[in-house]
Image 1 (cartoon, each protein chain N blue to C red):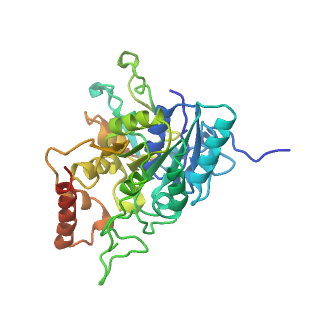
Image 2 (spheres, each protein chain N blue to C red):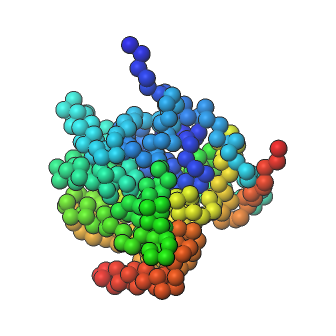
Image 3 (cartoon, rainbow over the protein chains, first blue to last red):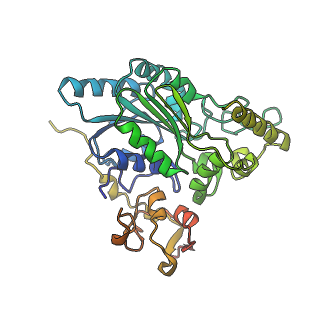
Length: 283
Length: 89
């Protein structure tokens, strides 16, 4: 198998992000240009003078990967190249927060870009600061758990829904715990035209604070508890990819991670109820 | 003009295997060559079992130059045939 993302990258042991990138690139093949917003991925893959990439790679700032990708694809098309895919890999920090304005512009113009966000639910590269993606109750260095607050006091930003509101051809959520589902979504998005967005849950060993062998187990559990919904919105049509036969209690997922260890039974109940309500609203 | 651009896959010069404190050992007698270990390896350093055609597959071969010892392969193996053993000097 050809290597588009090589060994020797310096992600932490057990990191979910290189698993995401490796599988996405295996599906996309070599005829791609990768644009990578500032993130863990950039740091671990491109420390000069070495590179883990086996495909053309552009590092952008936190805030402008959407614009760089739009420019790259415009340049390709004006040169008569209508086959090379431009794909963005970005973390939740740049997607939910810092690069959101520029991403929104890319979506509104419907630029021919596949945008893949690997979501590890905080600014992990700088040592775990809360982002718009950090879930309710998670302790980070900027949303610490103490006497007054129990970690982050706000709910996670519903980014996939916000992106779907731009009426782009394809929006999907995925998890590396359900790899075949993630790969099939990348395969589908690959051959579509216009702006496409895939949000993938990619657990972070150091930020979520769990044993490094449990990355895939957690990514699966997030789906099986119902906390992370798998769906696609294709041309405005919503389709659930998976409805767990029997939901596992959210506590199973929360108690495996030290970022949630301070939560009381009552707070866990609040999370469970919030999730039950989200599923009840689904038809 | 010399450009300061890194060459493809030069990350392979980083032998990240020396980060490891636990080493995965594959006990091949129970291995069904399903490829789960290779698929989920964050380092992409398990070969042999990653071929599409199951007939062409060999038992998993772990490249210890890069394996960081995270233990995902052992945790996900459906046959529980990978053992994590403490590294010794």
